[in-house]
Amino acid sequence: MAAHTIKPLASATAINTGGRNGHSETTDGSVSVNLSVRKEMGGPGLPGTTTPEHLFAAGYAACFGGALEFVASQHKQSVAGSSVTCTVAVGPREGGGFGISARLLVKVPGLPRAEAAALVAEAHEKICPYSHATRGNIDVTLEVE
Image (cartoon, rainbow, N blue to C red; front, top):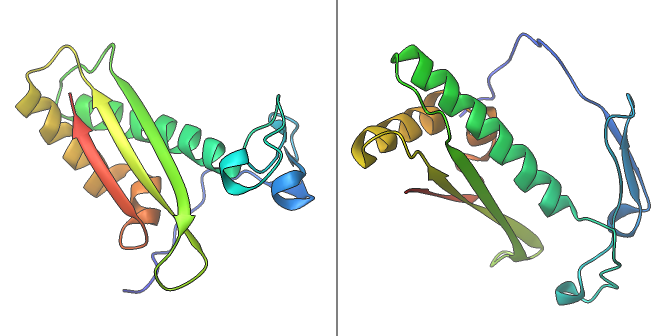
């Protein structure tokens, strides 16, 4: 499938030095993090540091939450009090190298599960840019509670 072009509304730029044991910072200064490879992956797992997987999980959770709110508003429903928990795993791929997977646990306390699941599915299929970017590239599991 061909890539879809977009009309950019906003952009973000980050610079990394030192890779997974380095530092990443956005050019506008809104994000500045020190990174280290986790002990489970053979690294130092230094306190006060993060990983690319943590950053991806935080971004995907926030983006998906926004997509869910957008879809709900289009259907004149409320998802107030909802939460999205994104778990990102990293590990060796069958074809070599490393890959990631994502699991989204979506809680929508104000709606029956079937209605919440329909909104979650629409947000995933039609709206969320992270879902579009990952589709067909990594395993993404959706759970609605």
